[in-house]
Length: 267
Image 1 (spheres, rainbow, N blue to C red):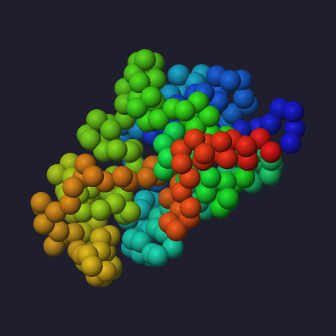
Image 2: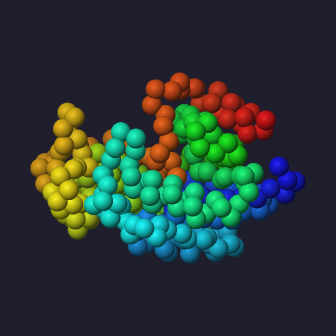
């Protein structure tokens, strides 16, 4: 690896990725910032990108799929979900990353990722290194920062939070995440009825569904308004992490996982 390595900061419009990129930039690293659009973001994300560019004193390069306009476009031609992950992640994020971004970089480029300092996220970071890209930098884990810490840092920087957080969503994912559950979709029904209805129409036309109940399809048109508990949902940040497999793998205690992760990164 060169003495002055190149870094890619994967900016997702989430608060954790925003702060992770800021820490890397402020530490003097040579960072290119990349944002992969999906076509289903809240319009306020544009304002947040501009605010963060001012904060970083750097531009954020925005890229998107030339094949699909949004997740619903993918669902019309593929499926909402499969046992191997959501096709929208494959085409709108993974394929864009591999075909449009990575060819411009050498194999030793280091990826800046916004996994936060919690037991679940540190273990996911370990799995990421094993399954995806071994050359990684995890600023939040290194500094023991969680999402609440990131929210405070943005507040101190006078950067307004993205609209999805202010609406009560745990993450700034696509509006209408196909990996979410009943409570989330009932909240979408209230906050974004046009997204709920458009998704329901695609379900009916394709005869496949976002939700399942007891292993069987549950159409949004049949979802009862009082089903599910949004406050109990934990939807993973949908930066690049949607296709990360962790089920069935050993879960390490928080500090044990952090030490292993940092040891691996330094070796």
